[in-house]
Amino acid sequence: MNIVSFNKRLLALVEHLGLLIIAIATVIAGYQEVMVMVHNAKVTLADLLLMFIYLEVLTMVGLYYRSGKLPVRFPLYIGMVALARYLILDMKELDAWRMLAVTGAILILAIGVLVIRYGHVRFPYSEEDSTGTLERVNR
Image 1 (spheres, rainbow, N blue to C red):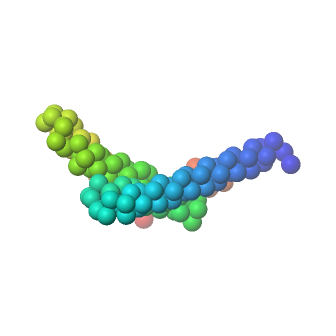
Image 2: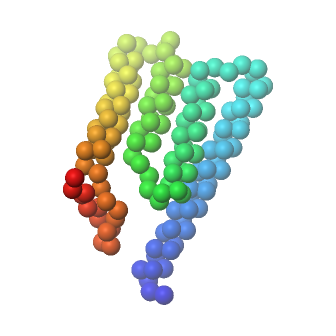
Image 3: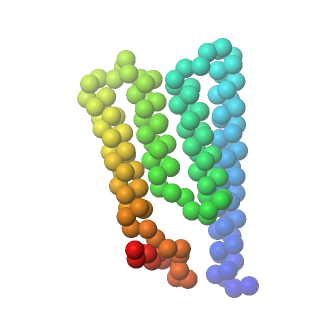
């Protein structure tokens, strides 16, 4: 076995271990949040948004295992939900400029998702070639 092959296997192992840790930590955090909701006997919008963030993280891990690829859109979705949660939780304490900044950041992320989706539809890519670069598919 040569050094390049060893390095690829080692990197893949570390990558899968990291994904496993992320998945386990997300499930534990989701369980803890459910227990807080049960203890309080109340579910708030902030709780639901936090659970949605956990679900998105698990979806990202699952998608990576299914396809071997991680779409850039998912972290953008998580960012939008996290900013919306921040806005909802701290709305009373936010001044107008900070509220505008947070909503502007959500808008920028949403535009980013639209641009990425447009690029994927308009300029699709083929599978990776042997050099690891992507080739454009001609329509």
